[in-house]
Image (cartoon, rainbow, N blue to C red):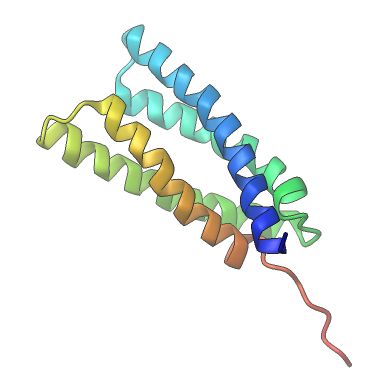
Length: 131
């Protein structure tokens, strides 16, 4: 397997495990009466912190500066959050689609975008430059 494939498989494992647990919490919280946007916001923040460490250490085996990677990670996930919120506002609030389905589909859409951002920007390999 290529590095790209290994990273992809590891990213999927981390993402599926994390998102399955978080989505079940999302369904539980919304069933208990918490608003779907509030539930998404809370669980999104938890997911960002949780997956950062798994993706940095295991998925991308990144040995670069943690602080720089974390800042970039937060920026990427903030963008993902805003996109997720916008889609919920449009598809659920405006068009009346079921939030469970919209949020479920957003998981996959954001996962693809965030994998590419992590691979090529957040955890990109550092190469030693010859002197």
